[in-house]
Amino acid sequence: MQNRVLQLLGLAMKAGKIASGNFAADEAVKNGQAKLVIVTVDAMKNTSKGFHDSCTYYKVPVRVYSTKEELGHALGKKDRTVAAVLDEGFAGKLMELIGDDQGDNGADVSTEATKRGCNGKNEDQ
Image (cartoon, rainbow, N blue to C red; front, side, top):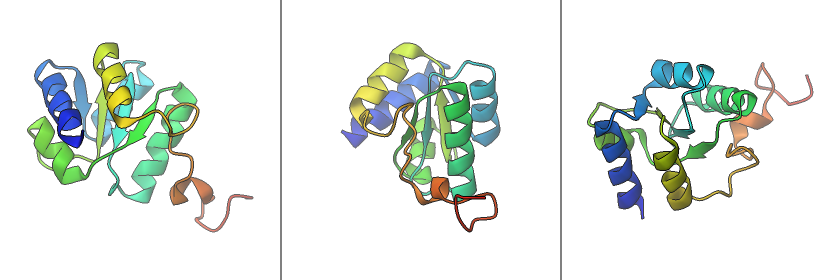
């Protein structure tokens, strides 16, 4: 299954339907172009939390998947921690393959990064 997901991401990249990298993905989310955001499992906590929060606010599904090396390779780039899918068809198929069990909007709400407050100590600040 992982191979199918990465192949589909590569196909979407060739079709011009991926915004890869932190800045491009963030802009796609804020502009309403992103239909799905994929954050890698080895992304930094700040990056992961930032995208989960942003996607929750803008109501964009988020999936945690793969490593930055594998994602970058699938997209034909160097290591990538974030990719935004800009097409609903690709996004729907990717969510089907990855799974829908990651929260209301797709955000993985159980991650350690989302349990901590702004200073990293606790959630009740």
